[in-house]
Image (cartoon, rainbow, N blue to C red; front, side, top):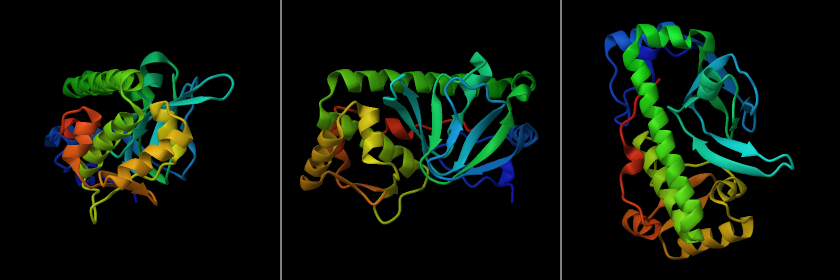
Length: 243
């Protein structure tokens, strides 16, 4: 059954900024339905002009760009609460692709209704600006990671931010969070070879800092992980608006 915004299972998580009753009602009017996709399915394609926008309700995916020869750069991982498809809404077409890594459940919004929604709910337009600013900050941090951090530092930085985000979503159970991606996905995100990625993961496991297996990420020592990543703890758990 379609989930009502007022009973949304992720809306009341501490990582999201609370919504007023009026904002919840506006979101319910804006939402047109839900979409469920299987793992490894294309949700949005680079160059496409999608008529729909989505908020992730369940599951995980990734954003990526490709070169003409098929090589791929993963831009970011997609988690519950993420808003996807904005590029098509603002720039007429997608400049990257979005793919599911697991079965995903998405809230669906019509792109044609976006500007009327923001006209009638200007505070939501500010939320969109906030999300865009956060994404810009993340991409800047990612450029720093790709350009300056070592392989171990890159993976430590990624694991720290992923752990904080998924933990804030309430997804930690038995000391681990779900991270059901492939090693190749992580390698593509961090500009590493698959072999180098595998060796670095083994080193983190041996040193009892973090482990990743069977689709679960475990952080054994957050302080040491942050120190290795040369990053501050807590940035991945900032409260954010939910669209």
